[in-house]
Image (cartoon, rainbow, N blue to C red):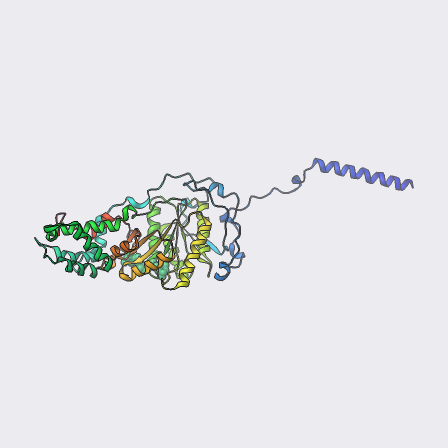
Length: 437
Ligand SMILES: Nc1nc2c(ncn2[C@@H]2O[C@H](COP(=O)(O)OP(=O)(O)OP(=O)(O)O)[C@@H](O)[C@H]2O)c(=O)[nH]1
Ligand SMILES: [Mg+2]
């Protein structure tokens, strides 16, 4: 009996000592120190998650966006609050630091707020524009045809209208815009002025300027958010990827930090093309695994750009025929996914049009505009066409501003569009005095 009593007392004493000891030692002391969660760039390779098919992604359930510590240091300069964590489409994305520029290090500091960006509108270079438009200015070109009508004449024939109409139509201005131009010239000028080549020429140039400047909305874009997301869309071969490369070159030269999104997941070569540009420019490119969803890649590029405090995300997309309804619907989905990554994105959806496609470019633009909320146009290969007039038709009919024009394949062959300079370069006279042909 006594033995049992002793045993009970001993157990009670041991328990008392044990509880006393526990009270003094918080459990956290016994645990190893907690590691900081890895930053986005250091996260385990996303390959661990199998890359879902496009169909899977379409119906994918939203996954919370990573890291709760990030929004605090990601507030864009515009002071727009970082959006709530949203759908993070499957992580089948790789980031290549194509050329690790010194700025590419991940900063844990909030990017210093930047002054509102004037961006790329400042450059004025009529001479190089004119060089790029050599074909359109040639005898067979837009300018050449008009020069033939007006040049060296003291007085125009009373029926200049028919010839003018022919010259404009032959230069791809389009029926509707040609009629409008002639009507406006006739309304502006009176009596003898209508046979005065200087007056008619000036009126024509004035109208061209009016059409192209779209009440001041044309020209290069500002960067309203950090990052500003620019989506390039268009048919195959229009020049989307090349334009992204050129634009990245320009922005980086301005000191802006650019991230490229290889959203053309349709062709492996398209990704490679963008990687080559990234290497040349010295910026990062975010790309997906084979078959990755385009929207998902761009989503991840935006997240990466936020992490790096980058200014601009330039997102490539696969070329698509404007007549294929399913491809156009797919593009809409991409836009929706991009909007989930960052409030207000894409800030610019630019339709890239090949100027050598003439009136077909106009037809493409109409379809794209019906499907997507386009913010502007990029007209490429204006160096390759004598029919520079297509730009007038497109602007007049679509009321969309031209942001940039492409005048060659080199990195510096992209020009911010300034209507006045463009009209001067296209319709201005070489060597002659201003005001007449
Ligand atoms: N001359 C000239 N060539 C250009 C211009 N812009 C693009 N190109 C050329 O046009 C071709 C097609 O350009 P890409 O940038 O690959 O066109 P894309 O729209 O990305 O084509 P997809 O990816 O197939 O849809 C390339 O050979 C470019 O070098 C330009 O302004 N002038
Ligand atoms: Mg491309």
